[in-house]
Image (cartoon, rainbow, N blue to C red; front, side, top):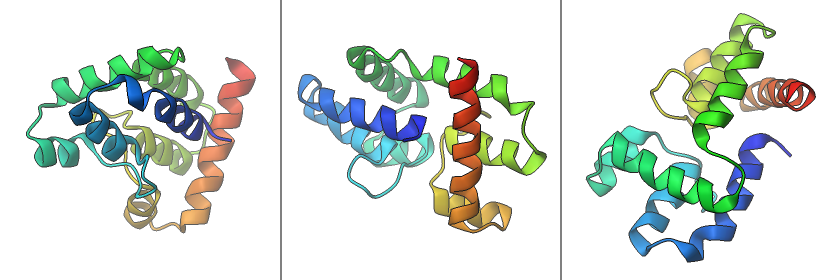
Length: 135
């Protein structure tokens, strides 16, 4: 199971502890309904929220899970980037929003980089395996 799936599983466990509006943001942002994760811009447009407001909702929910916050996850992912091929780096940057542009769905990453969804998933799994070995 990848780090993203672990985050999703933990977030589902705390949905009852946040408000309905926060729940809707988390479901859309992290793809908890199975429809894929959405970027901050997409979530912000849908709910009329700024990136900062969305980040606060994410931080609150991730804090409730006890797995740390999204910035820690992103920081740890950045640490393994240098061990990856350039295309693998791009996949990780897009999937986890490491460039500050929000996370992207596998389909969007695959289309943008001219890869198959399976290739994107394989690269993501490789990076997450490296992350587990180092942290």
